[in-house]
Length: 324
Image 1 (spheres, rainbow, N blue to C red):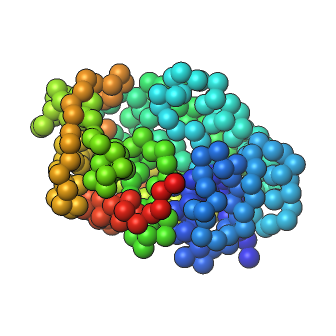
Image 2: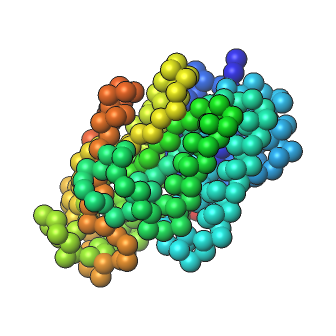
């Protein structure tokens, strides 16, 4: 039986995809250098610890397994760090991905699923943002993802590589059954609000309350990590069936404010939270909201988890996980 090679499969989103794929009966091989992932997040599959640009290791994996497709979750993702350390981001997210693609072509692996990001768009010209929205990244992280999208197009033309780019909005939550969840450190809003609810953090800070939104705080589009996982498998199945490349936005299509998240956490956990208000952070748009209609129509993909379920599953992980 052919296997899926999941690069970065021990990270937050990658590990949830591995869990989902195994539950769907797929054979999974994971490659991760564990720089930010954790082997404890892997519920199964064959694991190789190493760098995605290690050509000898890639040759070994491709020779020892019948790899049908590669799914790439191994990017560095912190916007602020990408501004202060662009080399780290272009080296890992672009240069190392090039090596991976080169070895894929040599091994005659045809299918590639890429974790892209809404950061390729930059400041919204309009919301919700469709797949054709202008692409003007504001940081090296977003630019590195956009560069790979262009690289994939060129590899497709030159080598017949078939690819799907999935532009995430805000991935959130944890496995509904509590087996795996988000990792530390996390800079994302929901895990940090839940740390306050559980007592691991004294307060949550809101960065900017003077935006042109209903309550003055930023609007973001949150998507359950297991809904993201299902989209990857649907995208792969559609790509292999139609033998065509594609781009999709993955989000709920609804903007939720920072204050709404905090209020939801208070209601669901029954905890009072200390909230402090601070100034805006540079580069934070007022609204980032997906238009996921192409994924809805072409893949038949519809997010199944509500905001309440996103928070419930994340809080269960927060309070039941043994944090080091």
